[in-house]
Length: 232
Image (cartoon, rainbow, N blue to C red; front, side, top):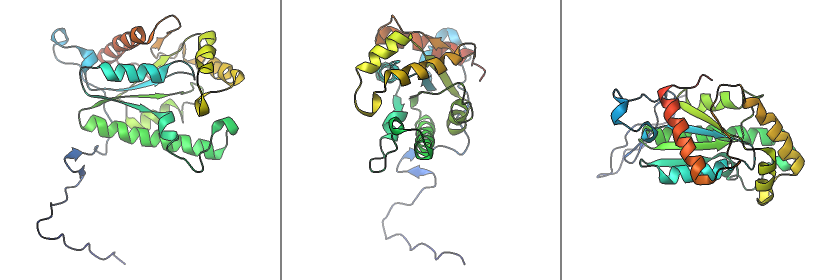
């Protein structure tokens, strides 16, 4: 049985437009494509193109700090989307992985990734670049990098930030709340992240670099990735 028709809009009400919320264009059904370099790269700064960047790294790598700094200082509109922030939108019933990884924490991670992917497509559809950050493991390609590719599209540019273990442990010790992990867990995650070496993805070792220098290196990596996208 078909649902009853919607009641008519009151006189003077604005007409509803498909795929919009107000004047904001919603993303198309297709995924975000690869950004196209300009016909004459000599007169354009590729680092200022509208892009979607995925910043990968272990807890304590500084990826959220770098992502926020990078987004703040671009000369084009750029959004920062943190997976951890989106996960923590769940208040009652939050499945904290610190209490043990289970089907609930897995489901909330997947839901957060889909939500971030929709947000990224929405920003790109409106001409706003975005940078996402997540601790994606190289040994879980289906739910990790593959999941991001499904949610955002082949135009996503992944970059790995991977400082040394001692640096990661030091930075993690300065964190608090749900973001702080045990030294054992940090070491385990860092060891798994080493699998990104040899993957073909660009890797930034920011062990001896401050945030500003790391963000500048990220700009250089993004420029190279637009001109010659990594295979992943």
